[in-house]
Amino acid sequence: MAPIALVTGTSTGIGLSTAVQLAKAGFEVIATLRNPEKAERLRARATAEGVPLDIRALDVESDESVRQCVREVLQRHGRIDVLVNNAGAGFRGSMEQTSPEALRRTMEVNFFGVWRVTQAVFPVMREQRSGRVISVSSIGGLIGQPFNDAYCAAKFAVEGFMESLAPVAEKLGIHISLIEPGPVSTEFVNNVLAASDGMTGELGPYRPLLEGYMSRLKGRYDGAQTGDDVAKIIVEVATTAQPHLRYLTSDAVRGIARHKYADVTGDGVLALTRTVIG
Image (tube, rainbow, N blue to C red; front, side, top):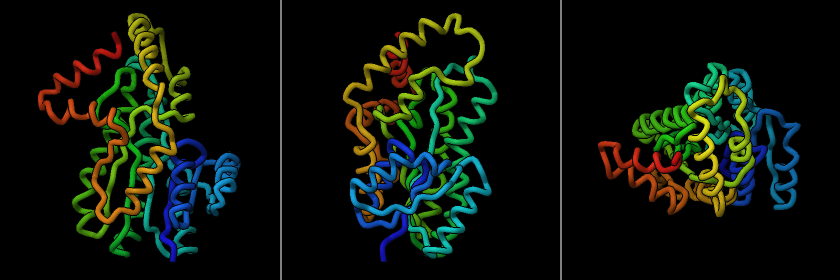
């Protein structure tokens, strides 16, 4: 019997690639997205790769949508072996320019959505005494990024949630892993590089800092990883005997993360992030 994997946020990017690559690896994949009418690329990729996908609606911002999807999956399959929390939304803006509505939505999608889906799936894994929860975080969940105040706050919350859950889950037979990419060339990134909805007021003194940051940021996406690159790592995490808690997805992000883990004062991290705003 093929193991069952539920993946959120599969319309594009990392989620789309993960759904297809898990299916190629022998999983029966429930590929979820908020609006199944926007699954054209997902269906086309699955057809091109010759793999079946069970495409379902799941809005990570809705308790009822999450409960209904999980309930239907369990009615059909009786179990869930792997959960990939991938759904997310970026937001660019300083703290002063971030509206309360934009902050709430950023936290809702990136943190509360992960909490909501994990909480819905966890009981069946606990009863099975087996399962894997794989959450797509970011280097921005380890090291704060200028003009990403709300997004990094959400990803830091995901990191704290999963790191706290991991030792308890392990006692129940469930493995917890975090995927921490750096720059990834996906539509998610294009949306973040575009002007963010929810910014308020004039940029004022932030303008030269933001322009310098955006100029340097665009350069960092030259030669960035692809969604397929990150998905390959997720498949490895889903299939390895003893998965790690954290997976930094490239040598570049591992080099950045060393600044944090080697310096308990935080001064090295601040020196590093200061360079990206000039």
